[in-house]
Length: 84
Image 1 (cartoon, one colour):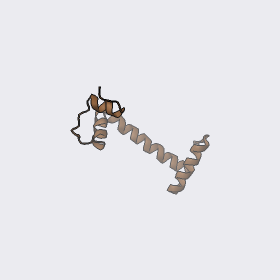
Image 2: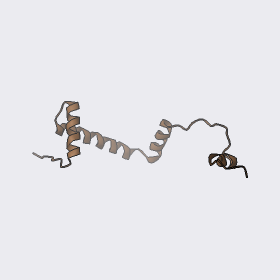
Image 3: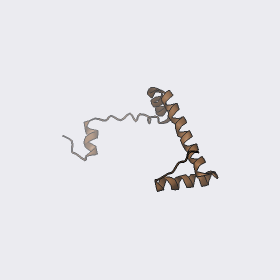
Image 4: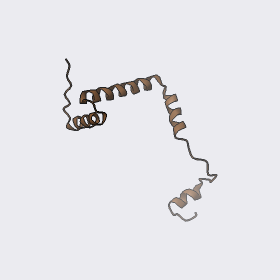
């Protein structure tokens, strides 16, 4: 039988907390977390970078154009500079 010893105290505490929330053992909690992460990584590998960026842009659209012009006067106003 294989065993897994978690040497990092913070990680062991986190595994204990997650196991408590799930009502399972620490081993089952770690197994579920690793299985979930593995599936996410496999999905990312199959998805091209272009598709991932397109999905991100769809989830985070740009705001509507304001119609304001960002000219020299605008940038000068950001620094409280007088008109030149």
